[in-house]
Image (tube, rainbow, N blue to C red; front, side):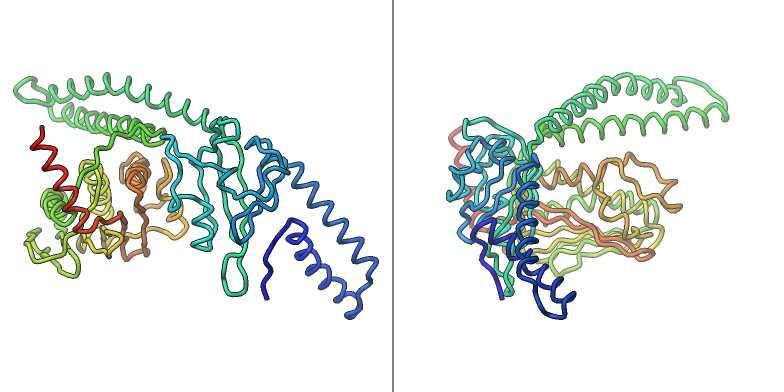
Length: 430
């Protein structure tokens, strides 16, 4: 059995009737008291209306054709549309969403379309709503589909709220962090420079004990400088100021070269590096990497940014692995290119995995507490990957290691060839 919701009365009445029938039947042996049932139904409907009319959040009920059937006062206040005027309209006419670059959401990104297509709740905390008077209001939006017995979407409920004040506070915090980090990097760099000179035998003469103290100070200063750099990068990532210059990149060749550069860090701990492209392993023992016939994986990304992500993940893998090997791999299908970095280290507790890509989050265990870090690296990695409509996540098992995955949209060979021709034509014209 399934129900197509056509109005708020239908939505709440069906749910209330179902609950009350079960309650009354269980209490009266299957005999329902009609007067009590109707009274309770009226009470529940009034409660629902009070809640919907009182909350500041916007609540919109859409039917199977994505037509607005319910539009509460909160939604009216945020969008500028009168409740009666909005009811019966296609949601596109009332809920126009743009990104921070003033670009209208396309059908693939639109949360409502995605909820209807994917059949799961879709959340968007970065959307900007264009009101009826053409104002821009930052909102937090959640769209939940209502499914029938065959798991088909028959309706959806969208709940959204004005987050202008929160966004403004976030921007102020980001600006403060950005300014403070930038200003502090200068004196820290000067201190690091003087410490380096002090440790240089050609410049100064110091005894063994003093050298040990200076080396510790130099190491701490480098860590502090990295913290300021990560703070600056994370602030830029949050407010959209992170520089990116996407270009056509063949990820297979890119990883081959990058793996050659990265393997030296692993070799210091006697960890071999394995590069796997498609289903072919291209060598690991002794850190040697050889070439083989493989598919071509084209993406449109900034190679410097992706290098930053992979290097961070690789360095983490080396930090937390004492024996075994590090694997860098690439595979994919017609839609995506998947990169992974796999280690045989300590692994990550299940309760920590969902927080791993948050700012300043560190896994608090005896195995990791002694290992330095800013707690911003994985957050920055996530922000960079999301710049290119990608996804990053981790799968891990304690004492058996972790695998970090990166999915990026793949360009077909035809698309890559077209881009290459356009670039070549532009160079010739220049």
